Length: 209
Image (cartoon, rainbow, N blue to C red; front, side, top):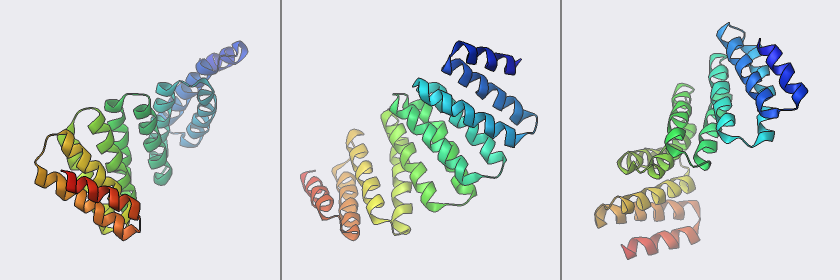
């Protein structure tokens, strides 16, 4: 039935409908234990849906593809597609829906394990949580992301996460000591990275709190 749907959509020239049909076929193939064929179907769906500009459908596809890649043991690729799906949904103005996609990427990174990937996912979770107004949860995610980057000697990324943390603390109405401490951590990280312009800006923010 799905193949009939695909052929009918192709005759009508409907990229979105054909892409959705390929996505549905991929899910069925995945469920019957044919992961290789499922990934081929997802690739066909992705090519078509990219032409439609339908971000919600594309993000759903990437999420499904990420699950298939995980089951096939291709964890690094699974992380990439889950993370991308979350970013697509976030940019489309649906941060709350982006959170579980980034959380799926986080779980994959922890199973690989990849500390850098874990920090990236936590930072993206923090951004989505903050945009969704869940500031306390965002603060926690940014703290963990910044500490991982700091411990892994990725100073510039640590600076970015400490800066995001400071701004979220300000939005949440936290005390000046806590906010200033985050800006100072950002300043130190940027100095360690040799990003002196960023460091000067962060120091100015710390002194202005």
